[in-house]
Image (cartoon, rainbow, N blue to C red):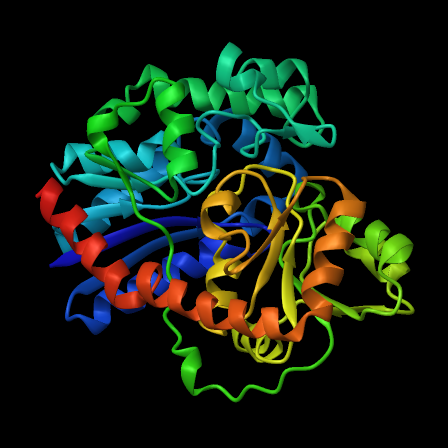
Length: 386
């Protein structure tokens, strides 16, 4: 089978970019041919000012250039199926119309909530917000949810409206959602149950062969974004968790904030490669995931489980499904630094419980997130649309 993947890379690299690479490698290992049609949002920021204005006034809503470029590639490669990941912002509805016009079925992974929410996160002003889900994405214009700008939010609303006007979502053969929580949200928004299937992310590196050398520190690895609970994490550490080392890996808008607070028990390691993250996971006592938005299926939890690393996470979104409270980790009240501290201190101090959780975390990985299971699910989805 030949699969063409469509993906728009993020300004700040994250889990979605890694998932695309993981699935491509997984399919190639099984003898399938994978072609990647990829763009990078960095290209938008690098444009001269007037070119950027021209882009947002025209190409941002519908790119004829993308349509022609992808059409040429489809005619040359003739894939059996197209698997779209993140289409925002360079791809536009034009990428999908190129596939439809060539008669090729499209599978879309819904990594986040961008088609339902201007911010893509259901997160506004430090808390969960579902106004777009109930009142339409034009609510995001009112609240300036994209880049804190009315004009930018209006442009994004126009783009989302273009997907609806051209009936792009009506013509996609299958939607992949990453969790039951995400499935329920899209169903609540009126999306078709018969074209949606749950397939969580996976992790392809076999961590069993990695050397384990557990040390006394807690690890955070992820995007340094407000909705990831980074500020609350740092404040909780400074207030309630003195004496317990915390290592922070990642990059993003809050990087300078983290650098300023990286003293005492808090150490900032900056952005690391995937291999480096795994190396630290094999040495950490536990992973902390303090997210304050509706996580879909954070890859960092799956990576931790592959390394037998227990997780302390927010009781929110898909984290409630992924972190089995009292088995593979502990859940705390979202945004509550004192509760986070209590759970971290409990698991950090009880070595026997941590060992049991470590064993159960690996068992959870083997039963739910192993590469062979991910491939089987993915292949069944492709076969279904063919």
